[in-house]
Image (cartoon, rainbow, N blue to C red; front, side, top):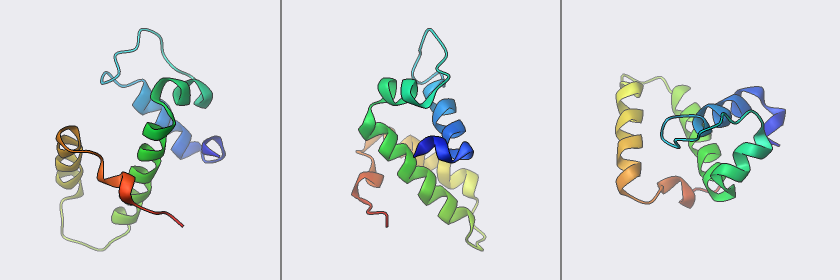
Amino acid sequence: MIAVDPGVAAAVIKIVNSPAFGLMNRISSIPQAVIMLGVDRVVSILKTLHVRKSFSELDTQLDMNLFWEFHFRSQRLLPPSADNLTLR
């Protein structure tokens, strides 16, 4: 399912290869990324991407870069709130 959307696939690959995970070798496929991240974390990433896309379509004065920076910093301290979302 992830591989069907090139933008989502690229985002997952980019995240797994980020310095936050400190991997010795670059990950180049979705199956490798899912193995390294785990299904729960991949689902959380997909939910976050979905929410982020929804927010980007809003007509708002809110600085979205600042909003997402705050969100990602908060996520390190608190359990991911995206786990409580139900997507249709």
